[in-house]
Length: 156
Image (cartoon, rainbow, N blue to C red; front, top):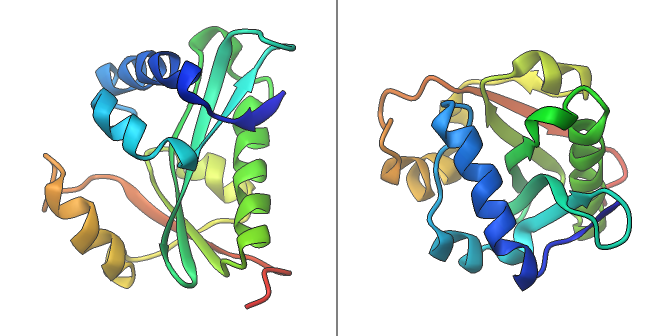
């Protein structure tokens, strides 16, 4: 079941993010950052009131651009379609908001490619580069791949 994250999910989100960050798959985020961006997150839980086993954030960057970030699934539940469901949920949310383009920075371009994203030059995403990337420990030597999807039916 996918739903918007709530305050009660913050610790679980932080744990899941930390596991992925320790493996170098995602950037670490402090608890304060999760609280600040809680409305961006959706969670996947197994059954009503089940544990949070997946997460994904949709962050609106500009009038026509949003980012999918902090996508993570519990190690023991991978390859069950949870990540795909979370991304599709985020894309539907972007369409509902009227966002025309969604991008991600990823180490898994094959996964996002299967969902209709195409590789783009990071320089085509200036709002992202100057808003978030400049604060990243990897800046300016980012090794993630930028991918973009244009949404049909977004009102743009």
